[in-house]
Image 1 (cartoon, rainbow, N blue to C red):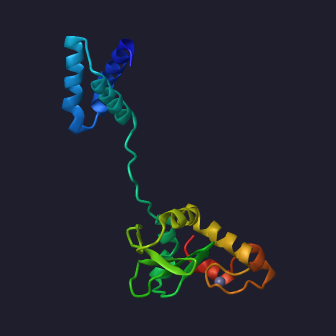
Image 2 (image 1 turned 120 degrees about the vertical axis):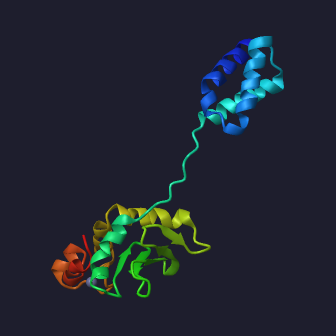
Image 3 (image 1 turned 90 degrees about the vertical axis):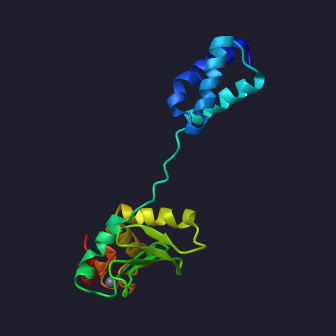
Amino acid sequence: MTDVEIMAAVERLQKLLPDVPAHRQEFAKSLIHQYSTKGYMSEKQAWWVEKMISEAGTPVVEKIEPTYPKILAAFAEPLRKGATRAALRAGAVHISLAARHPGTLYVKHEGEYAGKITPDGKLKRASGINPAALLPLLAEVERDPKEAAIAYGRKTGRCSICGRDLTDPESVARGIGPICLQLLSW
Ligand SMILES: [Zn+2]
């Protein structure tokens, strides 16, 4: 780095100081202080200045756990009625009431148990389940559970809720059976 580059970098670090991680604050300040008093910095120190700038400039992405309030809400009605069997099929995902754990939903992916959605709307993934494959599918259902159910019915010719073949032309067009349409809350 040239002297000019170092000067610009130190200025930039000074501005970004509040965003420098706590454990490097003192170090950053001492480098800035040294440079402002001595007007000199070693290559290694300059490297650290650059590193701290890049760290401070990259906001830490908060890991937000997805929640599934709409999927849970879709099952509110069967839950209220004390139903033990209700399911929603969408693509490779099968979501069903956990009969012995009211308020919890079981999630299967391609026929395999993939985890459960707990009453607070969080997903507890089963071990060995690849989130990269499952989460986008669940996100799509969560976006609009009814639309996902209808899309499944139209694509497969089977009702998303009960899994039976849709035979009645109206049901085929609607993508969901008439009784099942009333079963979930949407
Ligand atoms: Zn049905």
